[in-house]
Image (cartoon, rainbow, N blue to C red; front, side, top):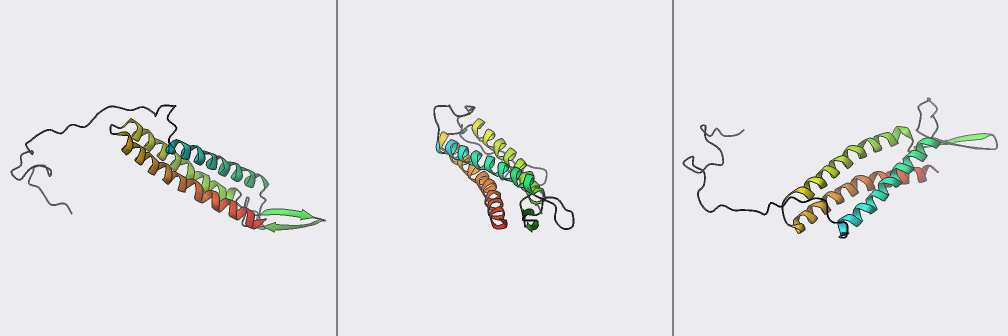
Length: 160
């Protein structure tokens, strides 16, 4: 619980006054997106992760298209293979039942990462700090894309 300050600001000095002294200034140049000619590590990693996200969406779309209902009629759980009149259901399969939550979690996380990158690009500061922060955000988004892609690919290949 916060300690009461007796009506004065918590960041005020010992007698309730603001600190006195030299005023510090920081560069305040507002930045737009990086120039198109400077394709940095962050931009290359972003392109790779966009390709992975597209692969995840394609894989989940194809898996949902070939999925069939299970024995209780629930759609999108196994995949059924038929050969010489006999059919066999293989699962778990990343159909709609498992694929929709993966896509539903990817959408807001992608929007949050894009918003964070936009804030970093427009924030004042030096290029190195911005690049480091952007690399951290892109790396976190990479985990958010790579984990479902690995799970979906391994589940689909295991069921086949």
